[in-house]
Amino acid sequence: MTGLDENGDEGRRRGRRSGALKAVGLTLAGALVLGAAAAGWAYWHLNSNIKSVDINSALGDDRPAKAVTTPTPSGTVTASAAPLPTKALNILVLGSDSRSGEENQALGGGDSSGARSDTAMVVHLDAGRTTATVVSIPRDTLVTRPSCPLSSGGSTAVAYNSMFNSAYSVGGPVCAVKTVESITDVRMDHYIEIDFAGFAKLVDALGGVTVTTDEDIDDDDSHLKLDAGTHELDGEQALAFARTRHGIGDGSDLGRIGLQQKLVKALLEQISSTNLLTDPAKLYRVADAVTGSLTTDTGLNSLTELMRLGESLHGLSADRVTTVTMPVVTAPSNQYRVVADEPEARELWESLR
Image (cartoon, rainbow, N blue to C red):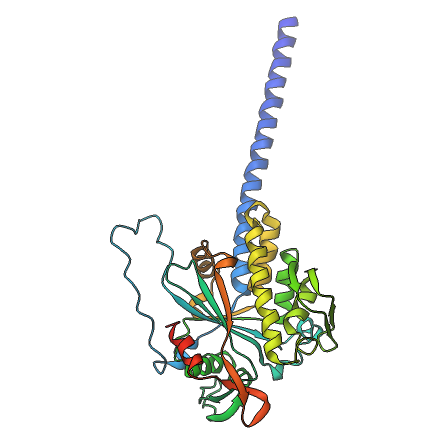
């Protein structure tokens, strides 16, 4: 009987071990399935966040020529992965001062029918993408706004001595791109727009951003008050920093551009110093904030393409980014407006072709 009892106990122990192993196996299998499902859902969610505009189809061939690309040397393309792009690139980046939604309106965005490009920057990535030039275009610049196609059909009329940021108001991203190309004669390879709420969320997802100002800031319009010095800003404060103009210098758009350029450098430094790959939750928050706030051209309207663009910039550090403002002078017709200062402005744009 003893032997039978021992055999029975041993059998029960083997059964319990087998059951435990099965439970662990099922748990691991379930975790893997759930993990794959979660990853798939996350990719779908982030990808579906991105909004896009087919600028190439809207503008057709009536545009500056594309930059000449250098063919990839033979033997560098493997079957497992295509090489990252390295050609020079020009990207028009706009920050709109109004997008629909309560969050944007709460942050000062106004109503959805009166959107303007509050911030306009042409980002030029040099061949190799280890250096870049960011050129700010003052929104108060008087330009000849070209005729732009409308999504509803027809087109806008040519407008002379029109404020630059009116292009976005009358014709959206398509007209903004066409206007930039008409005044620069530089092809915009891509278009990226970020809204108020999205920018604030991005800064918060990164844990804030550190900026230094050389003078006190007290702007009743942007609701920002800072003493001269270094400050850690949250998303709402960073947005106010980017929008401030009346509390610094002479109150012109040029003063605001100076703050925006400081903020661009500070954000690049913050992103470079944050190892998002070691914190998946933070990485997801950043990705969700970025994709949820973007409108792009159709060439960048997928998570895959945005990731390839980001990966191609792995050698670009904040200290290799040059920020400049398009040379301007006071407009003869209006002391509160500016016009391109020639030939300096033309020479700057020629250097980016």
